[in-house]
Amino acid sequence: MKCNRCEKPATFHITELTEPEGPKVLHLCEEHAREFLATDSVSPSSAISSVLAKQLKMEKVAEEIEAADKKTCPVCGITFAEFRKGGRLGCAYDYVAFEDDLEPLLVNIHNALGHSGKVPKNLRGSPERQRQLAQLREQMKVAVKKEEYEKASGLRDQIAAIEAGHISEEETTDEESPPSDSFQSNPHDE
Image (tube, rainbow, N blue to C red; front, side, top):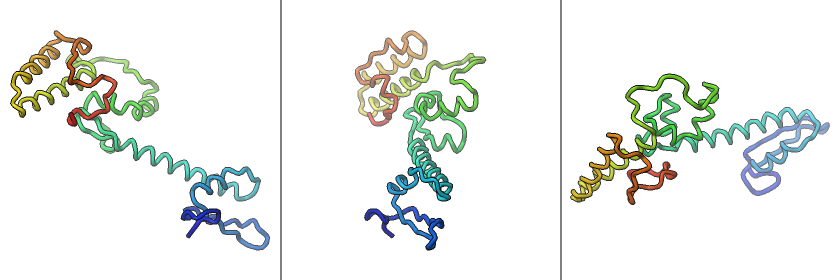
């Protein structure tokens, strides 16, 4: 069925019972339904309009959740959908990869974004450092597969130096590693 105001398919079917000559049926597309529901008419249909307006908002929220569920951590490969299903993140870098989606959850649960409490003794460093180490290990595997052993040994030494704490994240300037602001890129695509 087509919209009463245009040629698009009608997705909203509204029956108004306010007319004295009988029920009035409206078939509207989403765009015209928004316009119809946005009008400030003082009538009994305003209650129905508000319900339909809420439904439109819920559809928008559902689309946003669907888009967030497709995000993937470039380090461990967990998707946001897997996190929502299981309630556990895959690695520390997930806090960076899913930052925009996790912030409202953390504020809602803990009333804060920062951690206050004990820190594990075996703390491995920042999520950025873990991402960098995972990326260097992946580059080393590729170099070995290509039989570029000199490059692989250099990457191995760089990994060992970072893990030992001799080189900080800022000091490593490898021309093949992407800038730190591109954390959404997949390290396996390089």
